[in-house]
Amino acid sequence: MPQVNAPRLKAGRPPTTSRSQILAAARGLIDRNGWERLTIRKLAAEIGVGATTLYHHVQDKEDLLFLLINEYGEQVAYPELPDDPRERVIAAATTIHDALAAWPWAADVLTTDGFIARLSDSPLGLVEAVVAGAVDYGCTPEHAVYVFRSIWYYTVGEILVRSHTARRGGQEAINRRGDFFGSIDAKKLPHLAALGDRWAVLAPRDTFVDGLRALVDGLLAQGVAAR
Amino acid sequence: MPQVNAPRLKAGRPPTTSRSQILAAARGLIDRNGWERLTIRKLAAEIGVGATTLYHHVQDKEDLLFLLINEYGEQVAYPELPDDPRERVIAAATTIHDALAAWPWAADVLTTDGFIARLSDSPLGLVEAVVAGAVDYGCTPEHAVYVFRSIWYYTVGEILVRSHTARRGGQEAINRRGDFFGSIDAKKLPHLAALGDRWAVLAPRDTFVDGLRALVDGLLAQGVAAR
DNA sequence: GTTAATTTCAGAACGCGTTCGAAAAGTCGA
DNA sequence: TCGACTTTTCGAACGCGTTCTGAAATTAAC
Image (cartoon, rainbow over all chains, first blue to last red):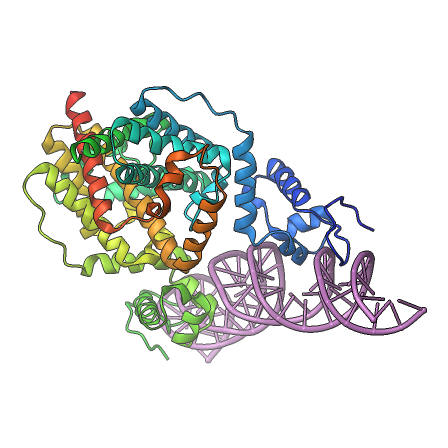
């Protein structure tokens, strides 16, 4: 009873499950329950299939999430990038950031080896835009890679801190911060202590962009100075 | 049979396990088998105690790792920081980076909420040095926090990419990169395709420091310009 | 028509982090 | 001395991702 019109190749038991069906079910489950509650077992149950079956269509859970990211990355409408090289770099990086920030569970997969190389075309175009922007600005190709890499670190770091903060209740952290400021030695750490409640690791998005701008400025200046 | 000379307070069954004993055993296990193979069950077995017992001395595994980081952070010999504010910021951030890079499993805990606030005194001194350096350079306290935050994102991002690469075999990623360049459209992604094998997400340490320098320069320039 | 090859499916099991509830082993007040 | 209380310990269990092994269901070859 083949329920799926997949391209039959040679022989074998006809499949009752397809990769696209799995991805669709996963998307539905994430939409309904949130991505934190997506498990392999529940996903299999949703489709009405054994949990181990999924492993014939998908490498592992990480792979599944990655496929979802790529699906998502092809559906998002990306803004037009400005012509000015510097602004193009910043806009492309910001777009990458915002897309990732919108799907917090992307963070689970964000530091996997070869992550960038496995991106689908559209997100990859943003990577290209960063590299191309740096070259247009006057950097060597080598330096352009290095520009992207630094931007990537910065962005990944922010996304990970952000998603981790979102994953847990924020109030607990705030309370702990209260303890922290009650217990640190103001004489040994004067500047930190003076900051009081202005201290927080997670910044609003605008300050992320400001930091990105500073980073890009510094990187591009390095790039043209090295020529 | 109390085997531990912990400070007995009031009443209750005398403990056979202490937190410091757990930490010592964990350190030994990590030294022998590597941090990837440290599990709660094995650690409990090493001490000769039930696995659930550990949870009375430690909140969870993340907490355990965090305690180890703080222990480690107090034992490392930190270099003297230069007087020049800009160089002090860079040196402090680099020291944080190197210390974390030396303990790859720190990455598991690096984005936990309140991570910085829970650091022990010596590492916290490095955080203070970054903030103080920015203030000395001429930034407002608010901007100094923001300087630190950007540096933190950048550093965390690099460490996480680094530790994830170390966690898996690197060869596999290289092979996949080969596939990647075989399959992408060189016309659509000309700059990326032109990079060939110079493309890699993980940078050697020196280029991390160069990027950090660019970031710090940009951030400090922003800070004094905004005054 | 039978057999071999091939592909998909699923039950059992492993080790993991973690929680629950009860038992063990002390101190302390009456 | 005897219960009440407190702290520590631990076995059982849960859900998780994942692997192993073998069964089921089809096509291809003889």
